[in-house]
Length: 143
Length: 143
Length: 143
Length: 143
Image (cartoon, rainbow over all chains, first blue to last red; front, side, top):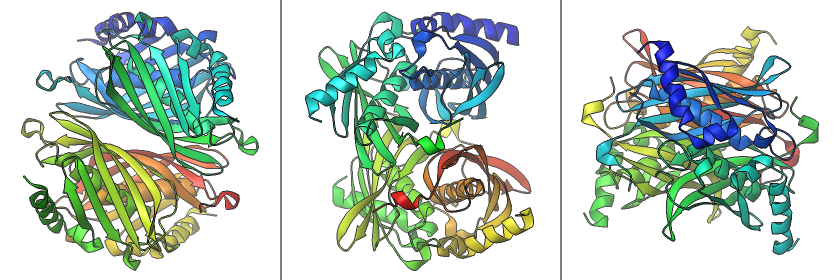
């Protein structure tokens, strides 16, 4: 699949996620092993101090990791696990999550993600994540 | 502070988080080192397969960890980091995140969280998390 | 397999690990989903301040998680990933790692582990861990 | 401090860690925010299948993360927490852990580490890690 089609397919999946639509997430780039997801820092996704809520930052990490891994594993995937370190408050106009696969086998991919806030046109790192994306196995479907 | 007041204070903070209000999060219990947070599994917080979005599950873990740690550290805290393992798809009527502090020092607390979905009145474990909650240090405020 | 046989089998596997023998690790208990591993705090496993080296604490967490998961997955397993939070310096006479499975499916188990140091006969929590143990899949064997 | 002196100081600290000496760890490079640690894959650090034990891989990650963070925080540091994903069995002649700081504030640094095995002269990625290194605070010394 060429990258324009890959991105279209990814955007179509995102449009089917009511939660991603609710918070205004946008898939901006998708290629094998790479993903860039944006979330405009609207009022509704903030916490009590005006920062983007940590839960939205972790959503963006989770979703970007899943897309990056999904491109390496034929799309039918789930996030098995991830960890995130917050390094700066998520202050700014726009959140950008960039994820890439550091390893991909037949059944899983291990990916990393950097999450930035755009502040006055400049990107500032606000969190880093790492996690496992697993191919959905029909024979081991969860209960 | 007695537990009824602690819960009221916690609910007042939650009401100030536009994102928590947006998704309908409810703080149901709060005591020193313990927190229970609910999120009704409405359509808007789902992904393309009808499950609660993993990003909402991670939000609930993050927020419950923060409350559990915050009760041990005088409230002015941030989540430094956490990790989450998803063990079952988040299918059901209601998400419940229960967190507790396993250690609390002067400047940080380490907490664990179990996240359940209520399915037909029964709770099913769908994720487990562990993370660090840090007291906000005025002398080392992030940029 | 009854628990006495399970423990014998586990101890036989540990005796085949040169590194576990090198540092004096002892498998003290093993039952379905549960494991207890000890490491005497000898001089050779310490760091420059006299504490048990964090790398040994993480070894104990890793190995205890693997045993706990292995009992749920027919033994042929690997640790996919884990995270560990250190909460106190590992000072004392003996390190004890207790792990249990919080979820086990057909292909993987998610486990938690508490790591204690015995100080003057009393156990003090020094670290907590959480991770994924995966069944070795012959069809997706790593390169 | 110039980099030659930084490396000498780092090697002197490593020589004071009985456990690092026991397994033959070598600090090969150290500069602000960067560290490279080697461990020759001798028989004694293996597990039952002949691979380097996962606990040694996690030791190398832990120690490399600590050095990388320590150079950014005036040396008196501890590893607060880290997570590691194993992506290939640790087969080969030599383990190399390369860590770098992705963020450093006044009281903590967040670092990443890639762990390779050298196989026939070629490096193969076998694990990736991410964690938090904290400055030792005299006022919040653990019990």
